[in-house]
Image (cartoon, one colour):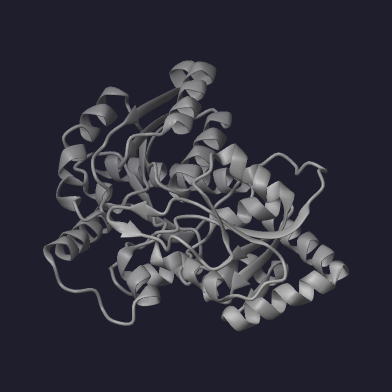
Length: 367
């Protein structure tokens, strides 16, 4: 099976598509990966080059700097790629298009199109803003891009039931909608000595991450924050009390920080899945999570939950004074994290791709 996967180079979508690409290649598929948004950084390009050397003709990578549909400059988010993607799909004899941007569901191609909904601006706004988003040309374009893409897709996937239902509050969805959890493969954590410290990581500029909460926390242990502080005009606080700001870290350095820490704090007020806490748990951290429905769905009893700065402060003080409770929390987080494997995710997507292909072939035969 030849699959073209679209991705972007910002945050978890890249990690997700990299994991899925690897799993599908191991399952004997041929993959064309096309990125949008900022051009790949050094580490991302190195990964793509390594994959190309290893998998040879079974893997191709194309970088495109068209803006993403949620960006303020989204006027060409669809029109620019729409001039090249159909030609690429035809030339490489692609069987299925897997879109990690909504808008490409509208491409006028014969191949079946599957969209993975990682998040959307309207559900983000409901979670992060007291008021509705102002009407604007940007928002009108965004609504049209997402609506047209969803209408043209044969199947929609979300990483949680919560995300699927949140998307359906704003847009009409096709009949085939399903939940496939994200998966991650990380080598077992080393046995190096850990520090009693808590870390969080992600897009600090994104209001959804709720990083400012940490500035209100009273903690007996060091708090560390890693991630980019600005993107597309949005910015994060430059200081958060006694919190140590690490800035953006390369993936290997971030995983090392996870392996050296006892705790990961997920402060998000909007988190359709959350790959960073999954990575941290696989590296041996106990997960402390904001008590929102999507994180409850993902972590169940594998995390300890808080509601505000006061309850997070209390939780940190309790764990600081109770190492047995901390050890149990780490063990529960690891058990839950291991549910979300690359193998399970890949198997579910392969089943879906085969089903949409079979339906497409049936329609072609009847016609």
